[in-house]
Image (cartoon, rainbow, N blue to C red; front, top):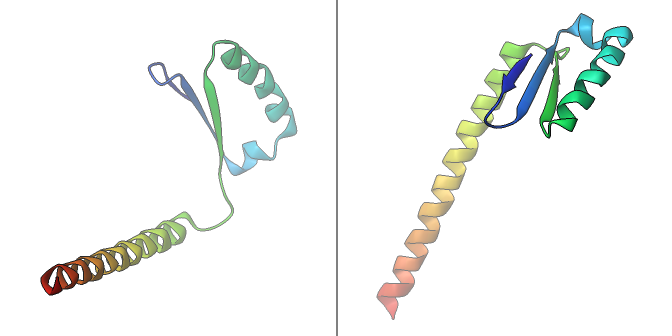
Length: 88
């Protein structure tokens, strides 16, 4: 559990085993309510079932490709604006 006082955020990280433990999850409800009463946001992160390395790598590759596509689109739009400006 991480508490960020300035942002008023509580992060709770659960392992695979913890996320499936109904007793533990029920016990967290009082914690949620305590922090809600203090006007904190509680974020619960549960461990996934897929390979973290592979998923992160795929996401980074996608973001890199997407940024390149957006930069190319932006350059084309700028070129088109310059052509219109020169022809006027």
